[in-house]
Length: 397
Ligand SMILES: [Zn+2]
Image 1 (spheres, rainbow, N blue to C red):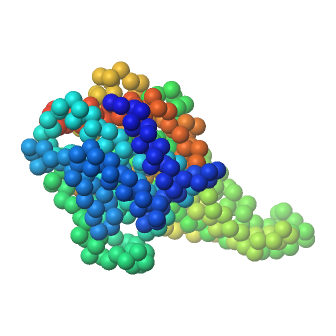
Image 2 (image 1 turned 180 degrees about the vertical axis):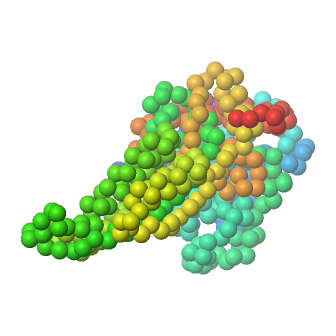
Image 3 (image 1 turned 90 degrees about the vertical axis):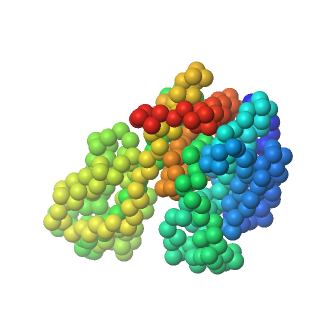
């Protein structure tokens, strides 16, 4: 592969929507987004791909094979406001580089290869993973329909963008880790068995509002003090459950919210994320049992299932990384990706490379050139393996 060529593409795309000191802002349907997509379309066509843009703005480039069944390689080209230049863009541009390399080595692809640049993965405009939701025919949320109208799109535009899973042999997504595990463990490649599921509970704790000076400690029903116990327990239970679960309380509101008044009400949201749903449900149950009889109301507000990547395809990534002699390890994805949607209709697999300092969604997002090169090499090897039909269905990752 030609790492200089790929790095130049990453930098050129990263400069579209870039502002000094702030980072890259290429939100879906913005002027910068369309400019960036034009650039990626140009690269695809230059590499000999036949391009297409669907009604919600996903860009695809196809290299015909003798077998119409497709191997898709994709990610997204939109960014968060003031984001970096690797999140999403890497997977799309490395896919184009893979096609260029295969052509240069006169590789005759049996299966049709499709590079996908999904739109609006980040969700700051219409909703999270909107482009791949349309592509995979996932459920369209009410809030998305309203936002779509603002950009001149209708439900039929969404429906017209739906693809058939049976047309695809595989979907491969190559992405930066956006966390610090690979760097911390000195690994070059992350093999991803799945994406975390999410559970969020709103917790309302009721106490009694009273004077902060004249109410002795033994006569108080302080909602925050009770909330603190619940929060500490949530952290402890999540830590004890397994070594992957993460627990976050990022929102806490107190009423009435005055320095000299004992809080009568504390409201917060517990978010748990983990590789499967069972352990998270158990933590919530433990928490409810331990605090039963207290003035607490716990209401589930979100439950998003975890995603399991295709074991066969994941094993291909692992074998290719091993064959190339790269240091690889298993790492779950704590962040959502377009693969959540593609995996509902076709076998899908996710490949990570380290993020320096684990930083992402920020101007300082950075991945080393040597890792970008190695990840792309794994991707190219995987495409060849899958295209050659050397999939072992009995292989269980
Ligand atoms: Zn991303």
